[in-house]
Amino acid sequence: MTTNTAAPRDTTDSAAPAPTPATATTPTSTNVNVGAGSGSPGSGSPRSRSASIWTVTRVTALVFTVLEVLLVVRFALKLFGANAEQPLAAALYGVTDPLVAPFRGIFAQPAGTPVIEIGTLLAIVFFMLVAALTVALARAFTGKRGEGDV
Image (cartoon, rainbow, N blue to C red; front, side, top):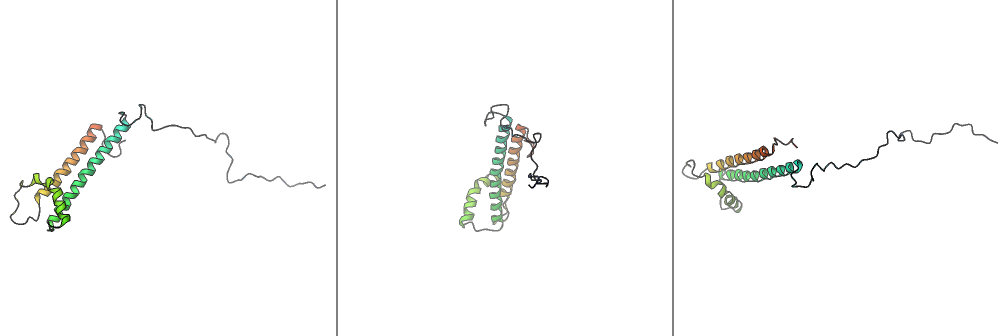
């Protein structure tokens, strides 16, 4: 008869310790998206109102940025003497003409071909100020001061 005198081998992997009852955790389900109110959009909850004001300020900033870029491109085309008969330049002038028209004639334009169109510069400044005022009013009515406020 042979007897096995070798020590018993440890079959557990030493790299991954087995969880003990104290360290084993079970996930809990908590819905962090539901506030004290109903939580539905438009319910007047602070989170939904904050999101809607954020959307309004972003859309307002986007619209005014597009207008300002169109006006800056118009100014650059006029400054460099672009051909007004070219279709792209003609389309840009046609789109931006109603934006510049109220500012023409405020300051006297020198005789001849205008190199610097003062009406366009005034329109750019005006729309920058209107955009800043609109965003500031939206934030003032909501009490939000900047991007970090949630």
